[in-house]
Amino acid sequence: MGSKFVIKGGNRLTGKVKIGGAKNSALKLMAASLLTEEPSTLTNVPLITDVRIMAAVLERLGAVVSYTDPDIIEIKFGNSLHAEAPYELVSQMRASIIVLGPLLARLGRARVAMPGGCNIGSRKIDMHIRGLEALGARIEVGQGFIEAVSEKLVGSKIALDYPSVGATENLLMAATLAKGVTVIDNVAREPEIVDLANFLNKMGAKIEGAGTPTMRIEGVGSLHGVEYSVMPDRIEAGTLLVAGAITGGDIVIEGAIPQHLDLAISKLKNTGAAVDISNKEIRIKGGSATKPIDIATLPYPGFPTDLQTQFMALLSIADGTSIITENIFENRFMFVNELNRMGSDVRTEGRHAIIKGIPKLLGTTVTAPDLRGGAALAVAGLAAEGVTEVLDIYHIDRGYQNFEHKLQALGADVERVGEKEPSNVLKVVGNR
Ligand code: UD1
Image (cartoon, rainbow, N blue to C red; front, side, top):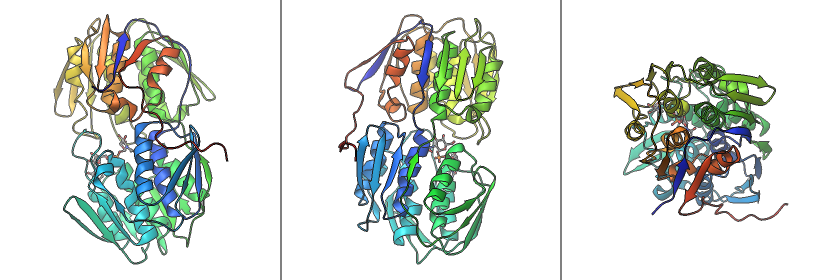
């Protein structure tokens, strides 16, 4: 049996908590290390399952990945690069598809299993493929694998149909080593894209326009290894802010970049929470009552889909009816049935969820259906009357480091029962 969280709800969270490195940046920076034979060192890496899976993918591609500290990894590829990312790893995490662009750029060929990962809708990769084809790759999809080959990639003008985060990142990385200039329009503007571009530029790439809708990449002959600190995880920060609000608590989030959370913070204020920002600290004080609000998820700087579930947990106990519209992934309401088992009154109609606030959630046993849905159920449990058991928390471990320890430090009554949090499977080799 897998492990679960047992949460006794009702404690008001208080105190300070520090945010770790961003999952969605760390995974891409790890893949970007493929672009050079020189070693790269990443600091502020979150110790989460997805990072361990990406490390295993890189090792299968020929890298030596070593931890010099719990949150510092060194990745060294040398010249022993293999072109194939196998199904047993890629199926565990969709983000593995991100090695496609760097492999093509470095080796001129790649064979990557069709991805699996978070079960939140039929995530497609057509834009990744079309974009790489525009850079000169020949790609075939079949037999559960994507096969790509190219002579030297050649810069091109590409317009994405939609600002996909993954497609933007794959194309950005491939273009850094292409011959000539690549201009990509309608790119994703997420802070993690900016972090990746900063990392690549530090490696010697020539990228302009990250964080705007158009990026220009002038290809260079080679890149070099660097040391780089992963940006803070805005979704972890947002999740903990909601935990503060839903318990009527008073907590301070340390180390986040408040601007990355502009819209989430303004939505929290609209629910009646008091939020103060000073430098890199965000303080939230939950109000005595939660006001209903409407939310529509959109690509950054819109409201992040990765915080939609946590906000729904909060709005489930609002004084009135809220509507959440999910525009990014069609299947991100899977946790609603579980939330309703805790007494909430949420009805979904296609992309919309209609949330009729109730006075109190009631603790019961629920199952995490995916990463963010699982985190939302745990957050709901913090405010529920009685005991909530959240099963299948391996989903939560994919993206939250020390989740229960951080909540415990804020005064939550939460315990992990069953196997311990997955520890680092990679050897810590001591400070070098
Ligand atoms: C990344 C994040 C994820 C976040 C999402 C949106 C990582 C590891 N994951 O996922 O946490 O929720 O951004 O902010 O960074 N699409 C296509 N064709 C494509 C690519 C995407 O149709 O070629 C669709 C997807 O099915 C989805 C939407 O576009 O409906 C958004 O996907 P995308 O922005 O690519 O998200 P990911 O990179 O998968």
